[in-house]
Amino acid sequence: MAGFSLIEMMIAMTLFAIVALGVYPLMWTSMQTNTRNGLHKTAENLSVRWMDSLIAQGYNNLANVSETSDPIDSNFTCQVIVTTNAADDRKEILLTIRWSLGKNDYSYRVQTIKVRNS
Image 1: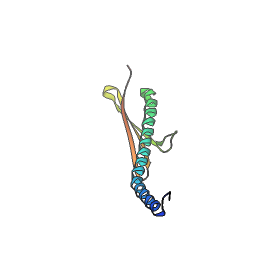
Image 2: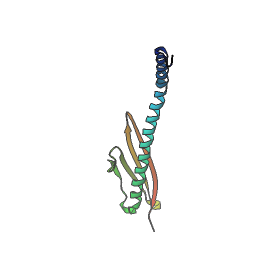
Image 3: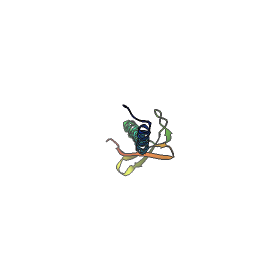
Image 4: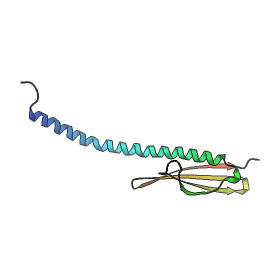
């Protein structure tokens, strides 16, 4: 007689179910990590775009930006804090990108210095 019996099929399905249930938490964790890393990369790209825009502004035009929703991706908020150091003609720029994922809040910060051109 060729083929599998009903008992053999049920044992195989039970073993498959046990293995699948063991692998599921790994897949779930991997998907969450990929999502979190994707959002972090998006925040990094937004910070580059914002910082390029800030640096392109003239020294005298740099100003604080209160926390505002990003015009391209509204899941992210951006805040700019500009601190002036008059003694050595430089401004410190602190850019913070914030976003939420589930119950967790995340942020990405970039800091640079702009010096007055002579």
